[in-house]
Image (cartoon, rainbow, N blue to C red; front, top):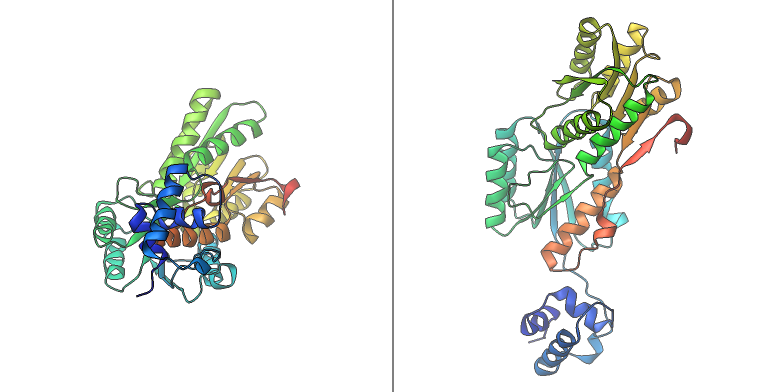
Length: 340
């Protein structure tokens, strides 16, 4: 029977990634570990001609569970998943996409349960922090299916890793931008969110309020109002805010539905007097930046997140190294002057 790289790793008591480092003479492996790996190679009779070849993981099947609806960011994320086979050398692997209402915890939990019965090796999910979702992720983990949360996290679950930006830092960035755009550093700023049950939205609100409370105490933050990332509902929320707060000075749209904010502000005639910070660079937000309706956009690279989730899942499934610097999703800030 042919001796495999995994056989060597098991015999040496190390990971496949560590064996690969030893075989390719890469740095970062302790001397006693190198000795154990080399001893296992000799003991098992691993073919010397194989030592120069890099590990090619076997084909795996991956599922991406993304939100339903017309959110442009998640449309871009889905397009990124569709391009994974041309972007990444995952020979023979498959990347499926399913959509579900991520605002509905039981529905998302049920979708994860169904996915668990479909022989996927790894699942990436835009997750709601809800008991049904946590339990479904935990059940997948017990079955040995690797799970990464994408964009929004459920840290209390048994998921393997989170792939996305630091949302608290994103909220702090938005707070600092909004406050500094306000000429007199005073006024009311409203938070519009999809749902505070989405951890990424809750963390952004927290970061925003944290920085305002610490550094800009003359600014009053109006309690978050939810629009479920639907442009029409968001537009109604903003119209209510403008009616209830004639002295409103700023808006931070934490999630999607940015088009609704744009339409409501421009219809009110107050678009240029109200500071507006939004998320994700889309055709709509780009145009609003150029017109001056939006003052700043906080963005994340959807393609990078799709590639990162796939690479992380492949590494977890095949016991390969994860390069943290490569998989770190960075916060990007766009103004009218630095649009790509």
